[in-house]
Image (cartoon, rainbow, N blue to C red; front, side):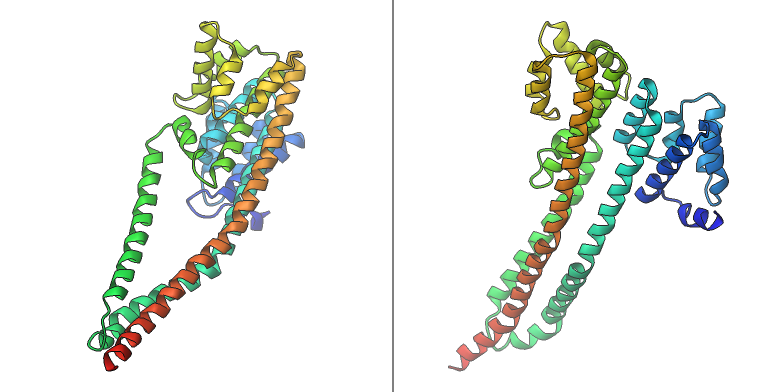
Length: 337
C-alpha cells in the first residue's frame, strides 16, 4: 500500500492518469460498501505527498457536496458536470467509475501519442539541426561558386511556414481559453480531421446527462431549469437556456435539435418515435454509450494517422536537405561549363 501511494501521489501537478486512478479507486471503495466519508478518509491516508484528499475531506465535513469537494482534483468542466448531474439524479458511484474509465482511456491515448511521436520527432529534430548546420557552416563555402538564390528562397519559405504554424497554434490555444465551454465546443467540432471526435464526445456527455435526469422522472422543462444552474457559458447551461426560450415561444424541441450542432440528428428520430420517459431515458443512455464508443474509434484512427503524417514531413525535410547539397553543386558545374 505504501508503494502504491508513492507511485500514485507524486508531483504537484495532477496528471490525467492520476485523476483517473483517484476516481476509479473512489468508485471501487464506494462499490465495496465504504461510505463517501470513509472512502475519502481512506484516500487521504494514501496521500503522503499532497493534501488533496485532506482538503476534500474537510470540504465534506463542512457540508459541501462531493462534486464541489472534488474541485481539488482539477477535473475538466465536462467531467465535473457529469458528476453533478449524477449526484442530483442518482447513480453517482457508476458515474465516478465511468468518468475514471474515460480519463484512463485518455491517459492511455496520450501515452500512445507520445510513443508514436518519439521516433519521428527525434529524426525530424536531427534533420532540422543538420539543415541549420549546413546552412551556417557548409553553404557559405559554395556561395562563391554558384547561385544559391533559389536555395535561400526555399529555406525562407520553410522558415515562414514553420513560424506561421507555431504562432498560429499558440494564438489559437489562447483564443480558445478566452471562450466559454459552449463557444469552445462550437469551434472545436468544426475543426478538420479532429472535429468529428470532439463532436462525438460532446454528444456523449450531453446525452448521458439527459438520460440520467429523465430516468429520475424529470420533465424536459424541469431538466432545463436544473441545468440552468450550471456555470454560465457551460454546454448544459447554454443548451438549457436555448431550449427553454423555444419552449416558452411555443416551438418544438425538435426544431432546436435540427439547428444545434452539438446534438445528434438521431435524437430527433428517437423523440419522433414517442414513448414514455423511461423508454426515452434508456434510449438516450444507449445512444450516449454508442457515441462514447464512436469517440474511441475516431481517436484510434487519429492516432494511426500521426506517424504517416510525421514521416511525410520528414520526407519533405530530406528533400530540402538534398536540394541544399545538389543545387550549389549544380551551380558550380554550370559555372565551370
